[in-house]
Length: 112
Image (cartoon, rainbow, N blue to C red; front, side):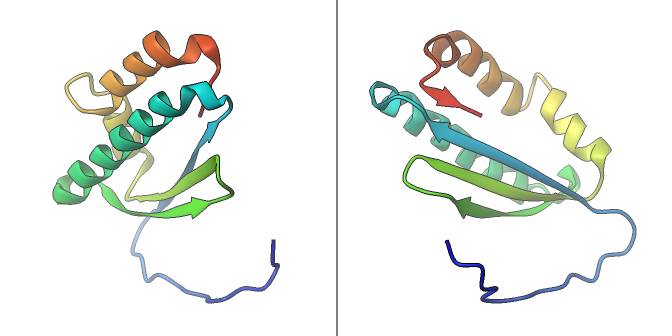
């Protein structure tokens, strides 16, 4: 891993800004189907959030850390916006976590 900074950037933001980093790792090769499914669910969440300017979601940047590990650096207008999305049972996040807890987590093949 290189310690060089390829590019620096700044943001002109009025008010607060929340940076949230969420990572996902494939721990067992037999869990590749669940890992792919989890990645698709996460991609759908980002697509939906980006399409809704009122969500408070400002964008994200993928951060790849190897073949089995990656993260998403997310930018939110406020902690309240992030928590509202994370806890809304009628949005995509709660059903995705329910799926993960019921279908994936027992084997430990995919970790968040």
